[in-house]
Length: 194
Image 1 (cartoon, helix red, strand yellow):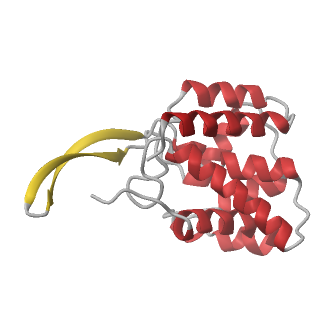
Image 2 (cartoon, rainbow, N blue to C red):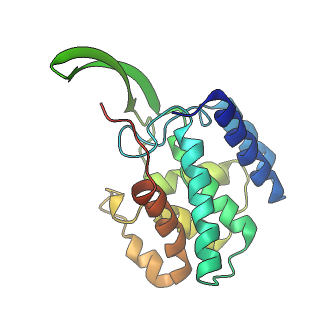
């Protein structure tokens, strides 16, 4: 769905935005992402941006939505926080997607198509895993960034021990990343149907 030129433009834009934060250890985060499949992985198996480069594409959309929401509602969120939250909220998905093939019936004929499956070797919670990965790399996170990344999955985190409404009630600004991700995932979604 994305051309090689678009993949490269997204990667370069993403890296430049991260660098612009001047955050301590941001280079470690960038190096880890470059060494992973982040810039080629899909954002999901079938729900949104399930194509090569979809994870980076989705993250850029979420950041863009945060910027729009910040302006529309005069939130006055720090630009560096919007970059960190928007671009890094889903890094837990790196090296989890596996490209495979399956047979599907299209127009009465069976054809073989590529598809993505997902295997998480460390299923400790979506937002929680992203935060842990960032902290392990020494990236300092503000309280808002930490809470927003953990809470962005809201009702989609299947853990019985997690309730994002507790985070949202503690700091109402934590809802904005969830809302920006929700818009990118459902309202602006692109996906490949099989």
